[in-house]
Structure formats: C-alpha cells, structure tokens
Image 1 (cartoon, rainbow, N blue to C red):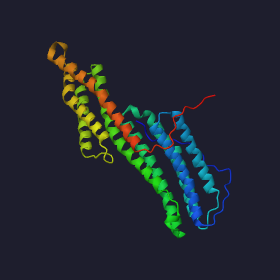
Image 2: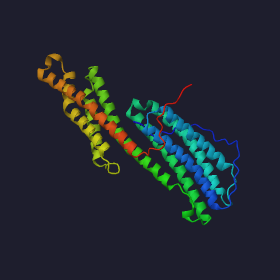
Image 3: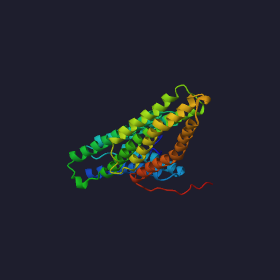
Image 4: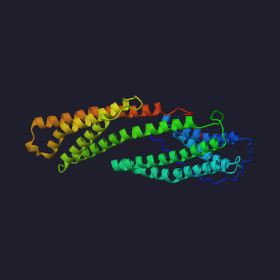
Length: 327
C-alpha cells in the first residue's frame, strides 16, 4: 500500500536577500500567497507522483524540488520588508514554515523509523499509521494558522475578497487527500490484522504446534467478526463502495474459514494419526485447498480496489515516468 509520506530534511537558513516593495496591501497578500502556493504545487506534484507512478527516481526528484521550494519561500518571505501592518502575517508565515521544518525533520523521521518495523505486527502497523496521522494533523494545524493570519491581514486592510488571492482550492484538495488516506488506512488495518493472525495460525500448523492452535484459530474468527461489524456501519468513500466491498469479502472469507475449515485443520494437527479417519484427512485437505484457491484473488482484488481509490481521489498533477539518464 502506498502511503502519502512526505519525508523531508531541510535547513531554513537564508543567505540571499529578496528585495521587493509593495504599493498596496493586495500586492503583499498576493506575494505571500504566490510563495505559499508554489510550495503547495510542489507538494501536490510529489504526492501525485508517488500515487500515480512507480518511478521512484522521479518521485525522489519531486521530493527534492519540494524541499528547495520550502527553502526559497522561507528566504523570500522572511527577508522581504512587509507592507505596513503586515508584520504579523510575515511572522506567522515564517513560524508556519518553521513548523513545516519541525514536522518534516522530526515527526516524519519518526514515521519512517516506524515504517521499517511496521510489517512485524499489527501493533507496529497501528503505531506507524498513528504517527503518520499525527504528523499530517500537525501539518494541517500549521496551514490553518497561515490561513487565519492571511484572513486577518485581508480584513485589517479592508481588501475586498474578490481582489485578494487565496488558497482555498488547494486547501480543499489536501483535505480530500487526508480523507481518502484515513478511509483506506482503516480498511488496510483490518486486512493487515487478519493476515497477520492467519500467518501465525498457519505457521503453527506447519510446525505441528497443537498447543494453543485452536486459540489462534478463534483469534482469526474474532478479528473477522470485529471487522465485519465495523464495516457494516461504514459507507463507501464518497459513494464508492468497491474497496469496502472487497474488504468485506475478505473478512467474510476469513470468518468462514476460521469457523469451519480451520476447525478441521486444528483437529488433524491435534489428533494422533491412528485416531484420524479418512474423512478427517479429506476435510483437512479440502480446507487447505479452498484457502489456497481463493485467498490470493481476494487479496489481489482488495489491493487493486485500494490503488484505484487512491488514484481516483489523488489529482494527477505533473506526473513524470521518464527514466533518469545516467552519465
């Protein structure tokens, strides 16, 4: 599953002065908006590249371009004398860019560390997603802080809204990205937990660990029940039920297997060979065959639905698939 991680390391140290004079508060407002919008555009390019393309070299190029743009905006805004009474807006913008630095350097570093171990357990994956959510929320808080400062500047200078540039369209786009992330993560966690519990069960079966085997089976069944219950109260994402339906099929499959077929598997593993009947062996083989026959397609369908949903709700913006030339 591709996550919209923005891992950035940067140092906001300005070295070149940016000289500009403003004759009207509208000019200063639009200068600020242009600087911030260039960051937003580079950010959108990076996110779009990571979702719509598997060209990792181009994705890295987009990330580096975003880092440079944040540096440029910090330099330009912090070193340009604001229009009269625009010091508050300037200070807020500088603080917001510093907050971006804090989030990208420290919080997303923590996210990346957690990501490396997230495949080990459901708890690790949950911690990874929680850290990612927290970092994104802090980015959102910083951006809201900027919007409030901009609106205060516009109001204090009596600038008609139709004459002032704003970032509302971009803000809406990123809120949509946050919503689709939250939705897909919730369903992915259900799938991840069921898959992990299932792997633990089959590892025990392969090792013929009869002790605790039925408890492992019941844990799959209980997790499937919880997932089915949660999903029964969920709606499709903006009317799109495909991913929800695919996850529901997966959960019901795990429920069916754990409540029926895996019972036969447990019986064979726990019983002495001389106590088993041919019917026991047949039912064991049927359960294993059914699982092997259906699980791969169900997982493929879920993964495809997840990719389709992410692509559908992530703007395709300046995506590049051209290979990087090496000299």
